Image (tube, rainbow, N blue to C red):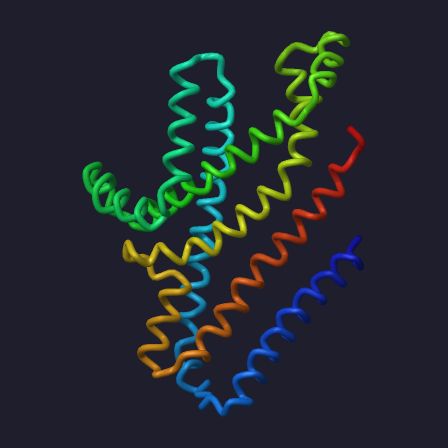
Length: 249
Protein backbone atom coordinates (compact mmCIF):
# COMPACT_ATOMS: atom_id res chain seq x y z
CA UNK A 1 0.00 0.00 0.00
CA UNK A 2 2.72 2.60 0.74
CA UNK A 3 4.16 2.05 -2.76
CA UNK A 4 0.71 2.51 -4.30
CA UNK A 5 0.16 5.66 -2.24
CA UNK A 6 3.53 7.05 -3.29
CA UNK A 7 2.82 6.39 -6.96
CA UNK A 8 -0.56 8.08 -6.78
CA UNK A 9 0.86 11.13 -5.02
CA UNK A 10 3.63 11.38 -7.61
CA UNK A 11 1.12 11.21 -10.46
CA UNK A 12 -1.02 13.86 -8.73
CA UNK A 13 1.88 16.30 -8.54
CA UNK A 14 2.97 15.43 -12.09
CA UNK A 15 -0.55 16.25 -13.28
CA UNK A 16 -0.54 19.58 -11.45
CA UNK A 17 2.93 20.46 -12.75
CA UNK A 18 2.01 19.43 -16.28
CA UNK A 19 -1.17 21.51 -16.28
CA UNK A 20 0.73 24.52 -14.90
CA UNK A 21 3.48 24.21 -17.54
CA UNK A 22 0.87 23.86 -20.29
CA UNK A 23 -0.90 27.02 -19.19
CA UNK A 24 2.42 28.83 -18.81
CA UNK A 25 3.53 27.80 -22.30
CA UNK A 26 0.16 28.81 -23.76
CA UNK A 27 0.36 32.34 -22.43
CA UNK A 28 4.09 32.59 -23.14
CA UNK A 29 3.31 31.96 -26.81
CA UNK A 30 1.23 35.16 -26.89
CA UNK A 31 4.09 37.10 -25.29
CA UNK A 32 2.46 37.69 -21.93
CA UNK A 33 4.78 39.92 -19.81
CA UNK A 34 5.45 37.63 -16.84
CA UNK A 35 6.40 39.39 -13.61
CA UNK A 36 7.05 36.73 -10.99
CA UNK A 37 9.32 38.90 -8.81
CA UNK A 38 6.49 41.15 -7.65
CA UNK A 39 4.19 38.18 -7.10
CA UNK A 40 6.87 36.35 -5.12
CA UNK A 41 7.00 39.18 -2.57
CA UNK A 42 3.41 38.32 -1.62
CA UNK A 43 4.07 34.59 -1.10
CA UNK A 44 3.39 34.70 2.65
CA UNK A 45 0.05 36.44 2.08
CA UNK A 46 -0.77 33.73 -0.45
CA UNK A 47 0.10 30.97 2.04
CA UNK A 48 -1.93 32.69 4.75
CA UNK A 49 -4.96 32.84 2.47
CA UNK A 50 -4.49 29.19 1.53
CA UNK A 51 -4.36 28.21 5.19
CA UNK A 52 -7.53 30.21 5.87
CA UNK A 53 -9.30 28.48 2.99
CA UNK A 54 -8.24 25.04 4.26
CA UNK A 55 -9.35 25.80 7.82
CA UNK A 56 -12.72 27.14 6.71
CA UNK A 57 -13.25 24.23 4.31
CA UNK A 58 -12.45 21.68 7.00
CA UNK A 59 -14.81 23.27 9.51
CA UNK A 60 -17.56 23.75 6.93
CA UNK A 61 -17.17 20.12 5.80
CA UNK A 62 -17.79 18.87 9.33
CA UNK A 63 -20.79 21.18 9.69
CA UNK A 64 -22.20 20.11 6.31
CA UNK A 65 -21.95 16.40 7.11
CA UNK A 66 -23.69 16.88 10.47
CA UNK A 67 -26.36 19.13 8.96
CA UNK A 68 -26.85 16.78 6.02
CA UNK A 69 -27.25 13.77 8.27
CA UNK A 70 -29.65 15.63 10.56
CA UNK A 71 -31.81 16.85 7.68
CA UNK A 72 -31.81 13.38 6.15
CA UNK A 73 -33.05 11.86 9.40
CA UNK A 74 -35.64 14.62 9.73
CA UNK A 75 -36.93 14.08 6.20
CA UNK A 76 -37.46 10.40 6.99
CA UNK A 77 -39.12 11.10 10.33
CA UNK A 78 -42.67 9.81 10.91
CA UNK A 79 -43.45 13.14 12.64
CA UNK A 80 -45.13 15.28 10.00
CA UNK A 81 -44.14 18.77 11.31
CA UNK A 82 -40.48 17.75 11.60
CA UNK A 83 -40.51 16.12 8.18
CA UNK A 84 -42.08 19.19 6.56
CA UNK A 85 -39.66 21.53 8.34
CA UNK A 86 -36.61 19.59 7.14
CA UNK A 87 -38.03 19.33 3.63
CA UNK A 88 -38.66 23.08 3.54
CA UNK A 89 -35.17 23.81 4.88
CA UNK A 90 -33.55 21.66 2.20
CA UNK A 91 -35.55 23.28 -0.59
CA UNK A 92 -34.88 26.79 0.72
CA UNK A 93 -31.13 26.27 1.00
CA UNK A 94 -30.83 24.53 -2.35
CA UNK A 95 -33.13 26.93 -4.15
CA UNK A 96 -31.40 30.20 -3.22
CA UNK A 97 -27.89 31.36 -4.23
CA UNK A 98 -25.05 30.92 -1.74
CA UNK A 99 -24.08 34.57 -2.22
CA UNK A 100 -27.52 35.73 -1.05
CA UNK A 101 -27.40 33.38 1.95
CA UNK A 102 -23.98 34.72 2.96
CA UNK A 103 -25.09 38.34 2.77
CA UNK A 104 -28.37 37.81 4.61
CA UNK A 105 -26.86 35.41 7.12
CA UNK A 106 -23.92 37.62 8.06
CA UNK A 107 -25.28 41.16 7.81
CA UNK A 108 -28.75 40.43 9.19
CA UNK A 109 -28.97 37.18 11.14
CA UNK A 110 -25.47 37.12 12.65
CA UNK A 111 -25.62 40.84 13.36
CA UNK A 112 -28.93 40.38 15.18
CA UNK A 113 -27.39 37.58 17.26
CA UNK A 114 -24.25 39.71 17.97
CA UNK A 115 -21.93 37.22 16.28
CA UNK A 116 -19.07 39.30 14.91
CA UNK A 117 -16.65 36.60 13.80
CA UNK A 118 -16.90 36.42 9.99
CA UNK A 119 -14.88 33.19 9.77
CA UNK A 120 -17.20 31.38 12.19
CA UNK A 121 -20.31 32.73 10.48
CA UNK A 122 -18.96 31.93 7.01
CA UNK A 123 -18.06 28.41 8.08
CA UNK A 124 -21.57 27.78 9.45
CA UNK A 125 -23.38 29.34 6.48
CA UNK A 126 -21.26 27.43 3.97
CA UNK A 127 -21.77 24.22 5.96
CA UNK A 128 -25.57 24.64 5.97
CA UNK A 129 -25.65 25.37 2.24
CA UNK A 130 -23.64 22.28 1.33
CA UNK A 131 -25.41 20.24 4.02
CA UNK A 132 -28.72 20.66 2.20
CA UNK A 133 -27.23 18.93 -0.85
CA UNK A 134 -25.63 16.23 1.29
CA UNK A 135 -29.00 15.57 2.92
CA UNK A 136 -30.43 14.54 -0.44
CA UNK A 137 -27.36 12.45 -1.25
CA UNK A 138 -27.64 10.65 2.10
CA UNK A 139 -31.39 10.18 1.74
CA UNK A 140 -31.04 8.74 -1.73
CA UNK A 141 -28.34 6.34 -0.53
CA UNK A 142 -30.42 5.12 2.41
CA UNK A 143 -33.62 4.74 0.38
CA UNK A 144 -31.75 2.83 -2.34
CA UNK A 145 -31.33 -0.11 0.03
CA UNK A 146 -33.95 -2.65 -0.99
CA UNK A 147 -36.81 -3.74 1.25
CA UNK A 148 -35.47 -7.30 1.15
CA UNK A 149 -32.39 -6.13 3.09
CA UNK A 150 -34.57 -4.71 5.85
CA UNK A 151 -36.76 -7.79 5.97
CA UNK A 152 -33.71 -10.03 6.20
CA UNK A 153 -32.36 -7.94 9.09
CA UNK A 154 -35.66 -8.26 10.94
CA UNK A 155 -35.73 -11.99 10.23
CA UNK A 156 -32.43 -12.53 12.07
CA UNK A 157 -33.68 -10.56 15.08
CA UNK A 158 -32.13 -7.12 14.50
CA UNK A 159 -33.90 -4.17 16.06
CA UNK A 160 -34.08 -0.85 14.20
CA UNK A 161 -30.77 0.47 15.56
CA UNK A 162 -28.93 -2.77 14.75
CA UNK A 163 -30.50 -2.88 11.29
CA UNK A 164 -29.20 0.60 10.46
CA UNK A 165 -25.80 -0.03 12.04
CA UNK A 166 -25.04 -3.39 10.46
CA UNK A 167 -27.11 -3.43 7.26
CA UNK A 168 -28.31 -0.02 6.04
CA UNK A 169 -25.47 2.38 6.95
CA UNK A 170 -22.54 0.28 5.59
CA UNK A 171 -24.23 -0.05 2.20
CA UNK A 172 -25.45 3.56 2.18
CA UNK A 173 -21.93 4.86 2.88
CA UNK A 174 -20.55 3.17 -0.21
CA UNK A 175 -23.36 4.50 -2.39
CA UNK A 176 -23.12 8.03 -0.98
CA UNK A 177 -19.34 8.37 -1.30
CA UNK A 178 -19.13 9.61 -4.92
CA UNK A 179 -21.78 12.27 -4.43
CA UNK A 180 -20.39 13.29 -1.05
CA UNK A 181 -16.89 13.67 -2.46
CA UNK A 182 -18.14 15.83 -5.29
CA UNK A 183 -20.05 18.02 -2.87
CA UNK A 184 -17.05 18.47 -0.56
CA UNK A 185 -14.89 19.44 -3.55
CA UNK A 186 -17.59 21.95 -4.48
CA UNK A 187 -17.53 23.24 -0.91
CA UNK A 188 -13.81 23.97 -1.12
CA UNK A 189 -14.31 25.96 -4.31
CA UNK A 190 -17.42 27.73 -3.00
CA UNK A 191 -15.38 29.06 -0.08
CA UNK A 192 -14.07 31.70 -2.50
CA UNK A 193 -17.40 33.53 -2.10
CA UNK A 194 -16.70 34.21 1.57
CA UNK A 195 -14.78 37.32 0.59
CA UNK A 196 -18.13 39.15 0.36
CA UNK A 197 -18.38 39.10 4.17
CA UNK A 198 -14.83 40.31 4.71
CA UNK A 199 -12.88 37.05 4.90
CA UNK A 200 -9.49 37.25 3.20
CA UNK A 201 -9.32 33.66 1.99
CA UNK A 202 -7.16 32.43 -0.88
CA UNK A 203 -8.99 34.04 -3.80
CA UNK A 204 -9.25 37.39 -2.03
CA UNK A 205 -5.54 37.30 -1.18
CA UNK A 206 -4.75 36.66 -4.85
CA UNK A 207 -6.91 39.60 -5.88
CA UNK A 208 -5.11 41.85 -3.40
CA UNK A 209 -1.75 40.55 -4.60
CA UNK A 210 -2.61 41.14 -8.26
CA UNK A 211 -3.86 44.67 -7.67
CA UNK A 212 -0.85 45.57 -5.51
CA UNK A 213 1.85 44.00 -7.70
CA UNK A 214 0.22 44.85 -11.07
CA UNK A 215 0.10 41.17 -12.06
CA UNK A 216 -2.67 38.84 -13.21
CA UNK A 217 -1.77 35.31 -14.26
CA UNK A 218 1.12 35.18 -11.78
CA UNK A 219 -1.51 34.93 -9.07
CA UNK A 220 -4.16 32.86 -10.77
CA UNK A 221 -1.87 30.03 -11.91
CA UNK A 222 -0.68 29.30 -8.32
CA UNK A 223 -4.32 29.72 -7.25
CA UNK A 224 -5.43 26.92 -9.57
CA UNK A 225 -2.54 24.71 -8.42
CA UNK A 226 -3.38 25.37 -4.75
CA UNK A 227 -6.96 24.17 -5.24
CA UNK A 228 -5.84 21.11 -7.20
CA UNK A 229 -3.40 20.15 -4.43
CA UNK A 230 -6.40 19.89 -2.10
CA UNK A 231 -9.13 18.52 -4.34
CA UNK A 232 -7.19 15.81 -6.22
CA UNK A 233 -6.01 13.96 -3.07
CA UNK A 234 -9.55 14.25 -1.68
CA UNK A 235 -10.97 12.61 -4.79
CA UNK A 236 -8.27 9.92 -4.67
CA UNK A 237 -8.92 9.14 -1.01
CA UNK A 238 -12.66 8.90 -1.65
CA UNK A 239 -12.07 6.41 -4.48
CA UNK A 240 -9.89 4.40 -2.11
CA UNK A 241 -12.71 4.35 0.44
CA UNK A 242 -15.11 3.23 -2.27
CA UNK A 243 -12.92 0.21 -2.98
CA UNK A 244 -12.62 -0.49 0.72
CA UNK A 245 -16.40 -0.52 1.22
CA UNK A 246 -17.13 -2.30 -2.05
CA UNK A 247 -19.18 -5.47 -1.75
CA UNK A 248 -22.11 -7.12 -3.45
CA UNK A 249 -25.54 -6.11 -2.19
